[in-house]
View 1: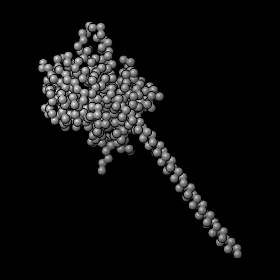
View 2: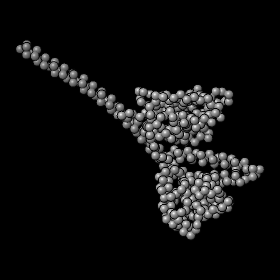
View 3: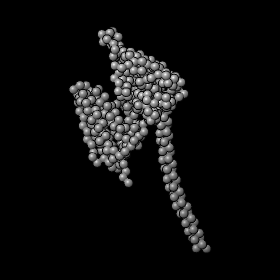
View 4: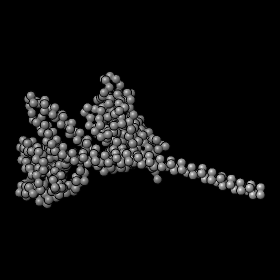
Amino acid sequence: MKHLNILVVDDKKVIGDFFDLTMGYYGHHITMVHDLPDTLKAVKHHQFDIAFMDVMMPGRDGVEVLKEVKAIAPGLPVVMMSGYSLDEKRRQASLLGAVHCLKKPFEVDDIRRVVKETIGQEI
Amino acid sequence: MHAIFIAADLILLVVLAWFFIQNIRLNHALKEKNLQLEAAIKELKATQVKLMDSGKKGALAALSAGLLHQISQPITAIHGFVRFMKKEMDINSPFYKPVCIMDEQSFYIKDMLANLMELIRHRKIQKTQININTVIHRSVNLLLDELRIRRIGWDIQLDDSVPFIFGDALHLQQVFMNLVINAMEALSEIPHGAPRTLLVTSKYDIENHQAIIIFKDNGPGIANEHQAKIFDPFFSTKPQGSGIGLALCHDLVNEHGGSISVESNHDGTIFTVKLPCVRLA
């Protein structure tokens, strides 16, 4: 099994911890960032296999963050995470190239499913 | 002289008669105006109640949306970690059973959140001309296994003369499925061996040009004091109920310009959904 480089963008530390302690346990490398500058820095300097990004960021719309990320790394598969249904935001994110939307609350099997559907990788 | 008096009397009589007739006319008009005023006041009161109701619901939706976003974060961690631990844990560990209970309970919260999301989300209604009988069939068919497992005898009697409905098939399917699930839960309270029945019917109310869909079960019924609150959000008579399913049905039916009502006694419960049919030009 290939170990993935996963970027997690969420202002809630516990979401990053969740990825780190579960996906990290299975050998994947997790980079957690909580705001826009750190996100842009991370995608500029590192190569990720997939990114998970929250739709709602404090003071910043997750869709705007996605736009800037896609400008730097157009090929990066991005999965948006949302706390509740935001159909309009999902639509916008999808137009900007987000490949999936993961609805919170989710669990390890949901992450696995989305990774498989997004990059065709069993993890 | 005598003739002059007679003429004067006649004129007076005519004038009095005219006044009398006018008085009757005015009285009649006044009564009519009073009736119109009463009707207007009644309508105003009903509108006020509706506005208060929608205001409450709007505030509730806004509050719930914010709360949901906040709650979904810790629940992702709690439920996600518990599932992960359960998966990786040795089943002989003394902690395995407590973890299973935590998993079950956190799943309940997760499920309730998902239902609540459905209640408050503003998915655009996509209305088309639909055959309501097809939607009823589909809704019951999706729950056939559950009906069989719970040993519920069911029957569907659909009236082919019901005209098309202008509605969102998915939303209405959700309404009908919720009503079937509700009936199944009520019927589960009947002791094993006793007959459990669910009858779903549709008929066309020609006079009001509407479809009437009825879900009738022979469950233990809903207490009188609970019937008025049965469609209120977060009201439930079940210990594990979220009180969202029927509130969602109520909202979705309202969005279709219809109504939903309940009648219940110790012989069972009847939910009636009324939906306006398409008017042909």
